[in-house]
Amino acid sequence: YEESLNLAKLAVRINKKDEKLWLILAETQLANKLYKKALNSLNKAQKINSNISEIYFVESNIYLKISQLSNAKTSLEKGLRIEPNNHKAIFQLGNILLMEKNYIQAIDLFEKSIKFKPDFWQAINNQGLAYFEKNKINLSIKHFEKAIAIEENAEPLLGLASCLRVKNINLAIQLAKKALA
Image (cartoon, rainbow, N blue to C red; front, side, top):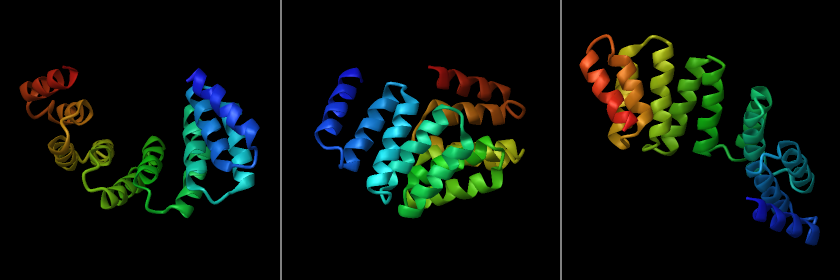
């Protein structure tokens, strides 16, 4: 990451008027945990061309890293105004709403994300999480099972194990062991 950062700095010195180079610099600064510098680089990119969705998506990621959910949400919304069909950004906005305990809107955003990418198991999994938080265990189980059918990943396996711990403790333990393996 350090070498990439040096190359990105050099590229920006060569051409300070290219917003994509500022975006690359911001991404390398983010990778090096230089969050304030990355935000400054994104600000420079926005001044050159404010109509690039990726600038706002990277900005949102930085705000998430520094626990500024409100700013992260605002940045995602700005980026989605430019690129409304970006399933990853829609998913990330759903994640923020999940963190804010706004489960119904989070579920809706995860559903919207799935419409753009039907095999997006992470969004299906997070619907399961939201339903779990709403104590709608049967819906939660359905979503975790659907996510597992797409990709057998530790996250939905543990989610399903949590749902089944009351109904079938042996199966829940088996699923948890499988997830940990």
